[in-house]
Length: 134
Image (cartoon, rainbow, N blue to C red; front, side):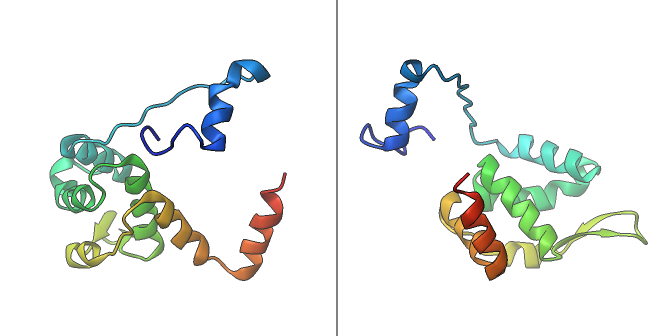
């Protein structure tokens, strides 16, 4: 993430010395989405017309400022918490604007992931610790 690390960061040093270790890498730059792009993404994800998802995508945009990582994590979180759910009778996705709007978000993506990990069971967190060593 551009501008978030300095030259002393171990990961930054490794990436800068990439040629020395003969490792291939690809830089991917993700810019924040504008509101119209986010509306299109939400619309396509939920298989609904943009006019039907505009209220939801507007809330998501204002909460995430279009940050792609925040957007995806927020949508996953809304699904897990039942705030974004399929309606069998209406044959489409539905949400309650007021409840989605009240959804709290941390200030940065790292804290969002930290909160998600902290919500896991102790067994799952222990497994993640072991697996992170490989």
